[in-house]
Image (cartoon, rainbow, N blue to C red):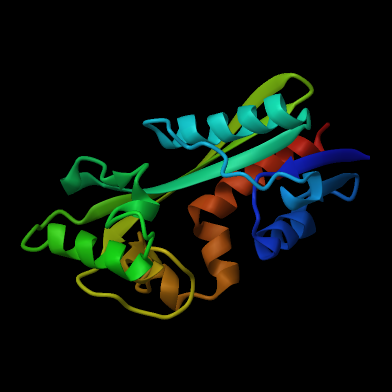
Length: 192
């Protein structure tokens, strides 16, 4: 049995990932290892933040672990909000404020191409592995749908006529960035 700490305090995220993992892997949350501090995220890239979080956990707590970071990258805004996606409109991390700022910054722009990117960094037995999931699409002109979270109501994946917020979770996980990165992680762990 392999024990892995998943750098999340979200019990639903933990349960979701545990259900996908092979039965020989037991997931622990941050609270399971008594980690209650904010894990630093000070890197200029999504990859950098995922790696920083995994390395912090390994150094401070000594566990095999993985961490993820996700960002929305918009072509016409030179990759913004990117690493600042969660706090694009300020430190309050409000999704509606973030989407309003994004839509405002894209007003009168023809190019609305964007991509969601998730990077998972796995620290396992002294080695670091990364897994990247990307979902390309466009930013809509207005918010649509009430499912999901974050920028889901304004992101419409390529080849679909719905935003992430209008899709059921199963479809979003199949075509989405986080689902793709998680699948790579699971494939890797299943072959150990």
